[in-house]
Image 1 (cartoon, rainbow, N blue to C red):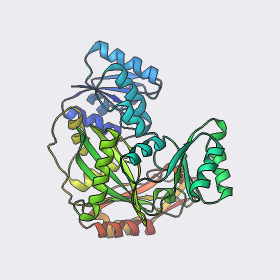
Image 2: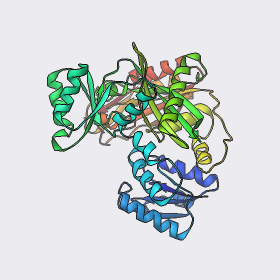
Image 3: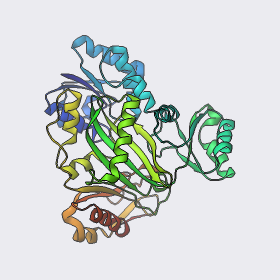
Length: 406
């Protein structure tokens, strides 16, 4: 089995997909933007070959490289696991006759208004939404449904480039900042009040072989706007509880409607006063190293299970559900240069046996803006057999550890 894998070196956990394919016996050719000398020796050892391309989202350049690989040897799969890469890979896949996620499915998982139109037609409860290519179309949408609303790029991931708008003045600022004045296009959405979580799978042949349900505390948009918040996500080990059956049923209906076949998926949802509502889905793994959390929570190698699915082999491991596990982001008190930390020793004395990963940039490091996400600065990951205790520990870490900067 020969697999072409897009961008094996960045972000850092991309190497785990290559490692897993190699361990499952696949021959892997990497396609990336860096010179091969920039890849470490272990990663190079997992690759049969490597092709450099000026940009992995340049479809013409990617197509040229893939065809060159096909002239040398048969190619069974072309895989991309980063949101920004999946559509270019799907188009090249169809142009070269390589099996995998279709352009239609990939596009529906990228274009928020089209995604929700397809799902509403299938009976999936979604927020009201519409595409907009002008300020007037945005204002018309707001007049129809009222405040608050969300404006976001049509192909965004997470909260990137997203505006929450609660009044006319904020609306005009969001329109100005959205790129509409420069020919851009946005998705307008009704703001859904409620708790936010996500349903992730590794699906094979349209069926979730492995599935996970996780929770955000607080919702992502709030977390990405307030520096004082130490945002968390926590994956549950109570997946069989009846309270999760509706989420699982929704996720599987979304898969069928969008034509998801063999792929990792990441689906976000809200639950509030108006019940369960679909938010969005990507046909790729969750970001910020969430799969590493799943591996630690479940005593298995999800990357290897992904690789087995991609090369057409049945699963051999299943999640233990032994632990609930989560990640808490630790923000600097201001932007600038990190000077040190407080509270870390206290946290390790209290919870050290449950902490399985952490990251503390050294003093002198430049801070990253809070909008850069859950791994932008310091963070801690922990696990515990009891979900409520894991939640309590994450809260305590967020209240105790301080990242000092000047």
